[in-house]
Structures are given as C-alpha cells and as structure tokens.
Image 1 (cartoon, rainbow, N blue to C red):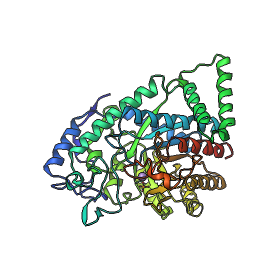
Image 2 (tube, helix red, strand yellow):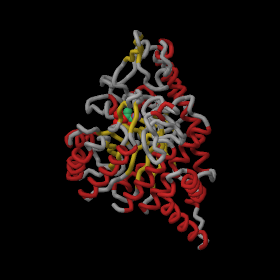
Image 3 (spheres, rainbow, N blue to C red):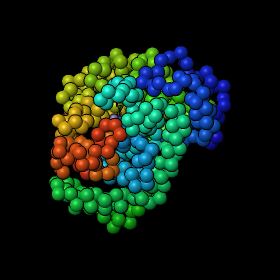
Image 4 (cartoon, protein in one colour):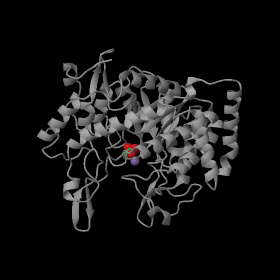
Length: 453
Ligand code: PEP
Ligand code: MN
C-alpha cells in the first residue's frame, strides 16, 4: 500500500478557522518558522501504521460493541523519550499480555489489546503555567512539547520535539511488532509469567486457583495436539490522545486503496475530556479521518453531548467507529452512567463502552503526591459492570494507566502501597500509574466480574 502525502485532498480537509483547545504557546505561534519546518518534515515521513490495520481494529471494536469481544487499553499517562527503552517497552507489553490472558479466559471473549503507547507524548493541563516559589514557567505539556525540568529553556515549547515524537514512536512500534510477532507473546509463555507473579507476590495465592484453571485448559489443548498460530502471535494496537493538532494533521495521509484520509500516527486516537468541544478543531479533525475514534466522557457529560458527538463523528453509524471512554469517579459512576448509556442505546447508535477508572479518582496525598487508590479504581470498574448489567448492555472494556515496572504511584493493592511508600519509586511524568502487580491484580478482579456478568 502506498500513501499519498501531497494530495490536494489533504490541503482542504480540515477547517483552519476552528479553535484547538489545550495547544502550547509555540514560539512564533502555531504557524511560525520552526513549526512549518517540523510539519514539512513530518509530512514527508512514512506512515507509522497502515490504514488496513486501522480498519481491522475498527472491525474488532464493532465486535466488542456487539458484546462479542473485550477491550483492554493500557500504558503510561505520558510516555517520555527517556522511558522508550527496550526494558520499559517490553515490561509494558508483557503486563498488557498477562492481563489480557486472564481477561480472555474468564470472559471467553477475544481481548483487543491496545497500548497507550508509541505516540502518547502530549498532555492537556488545567493550568498553562506552573509556579514554584517565585518562579513561574509554562507547565509541562508532555515530551512532545517541552521538557519536564523546571527551567525556562526546558519549559519553552519546541516544535522540533514533534519530529522526535515520530521517531520515538517508530522505534517503539518496531519493538512492539517484534515482541508480538516473534514468539515472545506465546500464550503458554504468558501463562508462565502469570504463574511467576502468583508465586512471587505475597498475596498471589488469592489468584492461584484462577491461574491453575487456565493452566489446565492449556495442558488439555496441548495433550489434544492443539497448537494454533493464534497462540504464538497477537495483534497489538497503538493508541494515543490526538492532542497536538499540527502533529496529527501532518501525519494524515490519503490511503491509496480507499482514497480516504487516515491519521497514520496511531491505530486508535482519542479526544480528551478537555478537547471534545463540538465546534472545536479536535472534533473537526477526528470527523475527517477514518480511524476508530475514542471520546472521553466525564461525570458532567449529558446524553445530548454524546448524541451530538455521534452525529458529528459517525453520521453513517459505521460499526466500530466510536468508543466512549467514561471516566466518572468511583463515587459518581453509578449515578452518572445509566442515563448516558440508556440515551445512547435508545438512539440506536452502536458504540463501545469502555471504563477509564483512573481519571475520576485522582487526589493529592498528605505528603504531596498526585495519587489514586487501587480500591477506588476497582470500585469504579465494579460500578461500570453493575450499570451495564442492570441495563442489559455490554461492559466493553477498560482503559488503564499502568507501567510494567514496580513503581509506587498508586496506593493500595495486595502489596499495600502506603502514602509513605509513594516517595520510594514515584517516577511518572504526569498521572500515577498502576504498577506491574497492581495491574495484574486488577485483571484477576475484573476477570471475576466478567465471569459473573
Ligand atoms: C488522559 O487520558 O491522560 C487524560 C488526560 O484524560 P482525560 O481527557 O479523561 O482527562
Ligand atoms: Mn492521565
């Protein structure tokens, strides 16, 4: 497949008069010389993902929306250039594969595996500026924009970083493809890792019986001589928030097969809670590309908001096109979600409902860390399942901020991370992530909900 970059179709695709929320104050503005150069460089580069892969993912999302698959999306709140190492990437993939194996066994559904990875480098912020003592500087907006170090030079937005986002995403995807195609992802190997987790963690015996069941199923198949290709390689998709509008536009290509535009910076892109204005540039952008699109919905979202977004982004009701990622907060989801799901279902729109139990449950610990409680995360997922069960709709998936490393950023879980522990390995560049063992524990607990749904 070839992709056309210079098509005049692209020049008039997006409405340049619309306002994009949450953009950095680029030096020279969004059409300054540096930005023009970065955009020209990006436009000349090959696609990171292929339109056909985006279509395959869309078809899988349609299956999940119909209740025949489950969605697992996970990764850093903010990827950084420094953390794009082989070890860190491998540990994240491994964690997602381990979670997926558990979820798949208990749901008896195919699990769609999606990384918040290979492109998740830009962040919306509640304040443009950050003040420390008597110094005020631009807030850190992700490695796509500036550096986290608190100096004027580091915090000045730099469009050249967008080209580095592309290169780092390409390197990450290269490793993702190698890991998921080259035998590393074999289901039997994944099961061995899960057994290791249970053996090594002091609370693992709670999940031993579940893991043993999976082990017996695998042995049974092996004894029957079943050795399908599907055990050895998995489809793994890349996703990120489509936030920096110049970057996403510069990586939009016309697919030569269908003659339709795709954002080739990632398979699945989502629009955040802070940038989903109906008349804003992000929604206009997403409405013009053919990728599957996610939209975050916070606790104040109304049925009218949801229906208007559907009308704009999916007027033809194309299956798999829209995923609503709700992030309500554990204390709110049981009140706020039912009306939304009911209203959308009644409209006849087919969407995938995914629970982000992270962003509604963030608070600051007494010792000054932005954190989340494992119990709140779990409780929001529980609420999500309860609501869908009551309404007879499908709890289609989860969206988790996680890492494969043993960080201490979220409280609780079987290892009982305490407020005091937060200071020992608090490494995130933005929001707190579940660590490897909290992530696996969550997957066992969600697997139980899936079994009982
Ligand atoms: C995020 O996913 O990191 C994020 C910023 O989420 P939201 O748009 O839901 O606040
Ligand atoms: Mn986040």
